[in-house]
Image 1 (cartoon, rainbow, N blue to C red):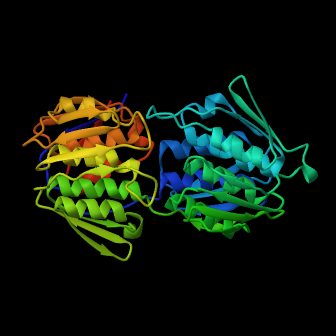
Image 2 (cartoon, rainbow, N blue to C red):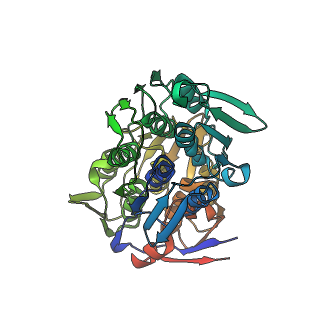
Image 3 (tube, one colour):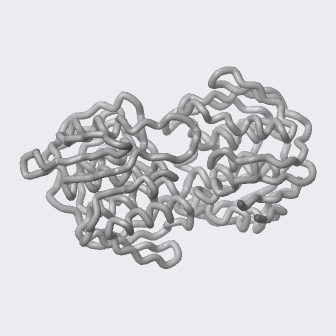
Length: 421
């Protein structure tokens, strides 16, 4: 099993290009199931989760051609309406095929999903939303069996649906399903994340009628069919945020290309408070730091507040910052699993419920640590970059799910990091 070996103490300097967002690409790849002609995408990163999604779509009969970051998907001859447990178990986002399959073909059989062990992410909001649109749904033997065959014209029916919790994938699934429904659907308490907006923009190019994406009320007027389009995936704000923290922690100067500051307002604000200098250009962000940072309190919440996917990285920053910081996680209940591993590096962290108290230490010492999920893996790499001596991060298959060419990009910036098995 692959691991990363990091020699700490190197300042990061230079520039890199941020990849297309994994969390935008996954639903947009699934949206290809809605189209009767090919969907042409660019900015699709080479990541394990994206490979898994492409394999899943391939098993359904979607014809896929991939060339670098460009992917063409032709769903004109879909032959299977099932997402098996073997395909779904490694990635929760596989649930995103449910809405498109059901609304276009009138039937879907999708395994209950698996994925990271960062807490409960129930699919009941997806199911209740589709039922509000008229779908008949049964869960048997670990599978969601959904049908519209009993409905007029076998089409989902537009409805008003209020989501009890803000859910990104739930919003995306229902938005796709409603695009081919009969009538108007209004999603209330919808997720506002940039990845939801990117999906909406792609669907609109395909012929969907959607307004309000980026707000908490999204309105979708169903159409009879959707066609393919050309779409470039939005840049990955979490990848950008991770490298921004890396620059601040190591006391370097890093310029990020293909990075949108408007998607990272909360992260930029916290970095500046910590003492880093952040310069914003057109599609570029530059972070400069002397490495002397002050502790910064973090409280995660749905967009546009501070993102849960940046919590672990800022905890790493706080371990070597001056002062004491409170890190409060409100989204996922098991998202402090990196704390024990950071303590192996010498971090001073205590946990009380959903809040971690982080006291900055003068230095971290390299050690062998184990990644438990995607963003926890990134935080351990960040800690290793500033730790004295050698840090070994094991089980980095998590990293490969969300960071394209991580060691290559870090090496380009001057880090001493290599992959080993």
